[in-house]
Length: 111
Image (cartoon, rainbow, N blue to C red; front, side, top):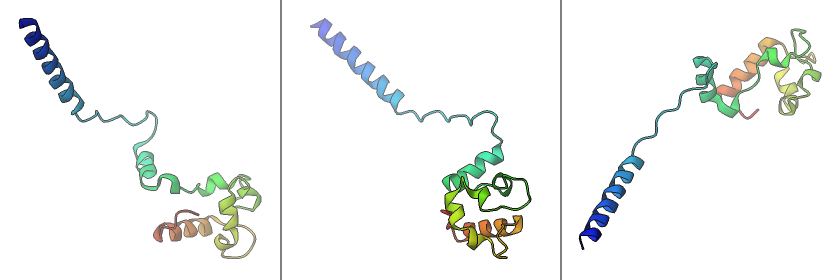
């Protein structure tokens, strides 16, 4: 009988200890190394809605974005005429930044 009580008491104390351990809050994870804090916060705010920067899109380095520059960005290519407010067949930095600002202001981030 003494063995059963000891076994029951051991099982009960183990279960209580395990329950307490599982109830602990998980430890916060550290941000990936090498990623600036401002960039992390930017990704948190915009996540999948981030649009590439003007410099990333200006693949030719011409100072403007052409339709050819947007070949890898079909959703932006669909919006080319909307972004090109001057109607000159290229997107200036000012046109692109103004378009991004309008989209972010209306939360229509999905291109």
